[in-house]
Length: 256
Ligand SMILES: [Zn+2]
Image (cartoon, rainbow, N blue to C red; front, side):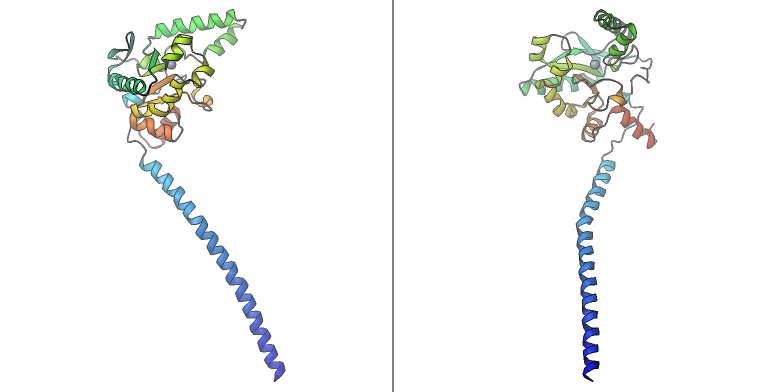
């Protein structure tokens, strides 16, 4: 009888131990699940927010035209208007650009436009001059061309032909360096830093991003801003996307 009691007690003990182990293991898993759950839901929320905030636009919209090494500017008439004395831009973005210049001035960082609308023949002159300068520095013609096209688009392939892009620096920079664009110095200038933070509020994007040179085929240019409209500019800025990548997304969504 005592033996039976001992057996029963042992069996009971074994059951308790096994149950205890199982229970604590299960509890751990539950805790892990609880810890993972908010992460998954926050990621889901992030993704859905991005989709929800995806701008309701089409790749054919006038302000989203893609012009780069692969896409030539289409033959179109542009209604140009003057800005900052001797520059011209598409009349539809004059007001926004003026507001951008005003806001920078209010922030104590007055800006200077260095280039805006360019004709194809003017781009030809710029490219030729730059190639000659590179040859004069000792480069072969091929090397000179390669170097030039990392910073200047081929004639017909520049956003400046659209009248929707500006090269812009702060006036302090302009007083020290003139119209010469020195990449390292511009990128750390206060004008460039202010623009990076604020240009999207006026519909402009930093067009040639650092680290995305393989996509844009143009070196990082802290001075080149392109008008795409406020909604798209903010979306691109928040998601660190180039206009090329945005056009791909539009294509995937059938927004052509
Ligand atoms: Zn430019």
